[in-house]
Image (tube, rainbow, N blue to C red; front, side, top):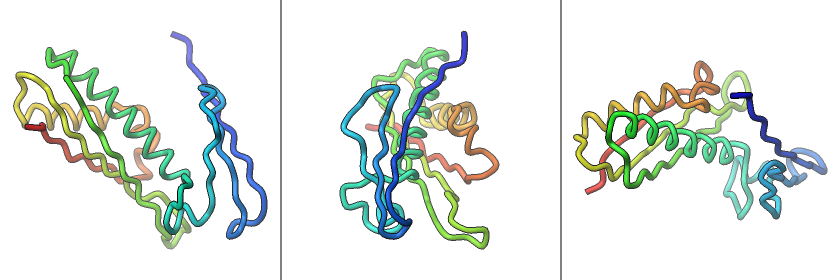
Length: 148
C-alpha cells in the first residue's frame, strides 16, 4: 500500500497574544474552519480549538482504531470503544511543550476479561501511529476498563 497524505492549513494574523487564526481540514473538506488563538491554548477554550486539542483528537481516533483492530484480531470484536485523550500543555524549562497524553478508554467487548482488555489497550498504545509519533517526547498513559 502506498503512503497516504492528509493536508490541513492554518492561517494566522497578528501577534501571538492578540492574534488569531483558522485551521482548515483540507483533505476532508470539513468546513467551516476551526478558530484558534493563544488564549484557547493557555486559558479557557472559549469556543476555539488548539493544536493540543487537535493532537488529542487525532490520538483518540488512532488509538481507538488500533485497539479495535487488536481486539478483533484476537476474536473479540468490540461493540463500542469510547476513548478520551487529554493532552497536557505546559511551560517547561525548555519552553512550552506537550508533556503528557492521557488516554481513557471504556469498552463494551463481549467475552473478554478486564485484564485482557487492559493488555490490548497497552498494545494499542504501543502500536498506534500517533503514539509512535509522540513516543520519546510525550509521556503517554492509558486507563482502560470495560463498561458494565
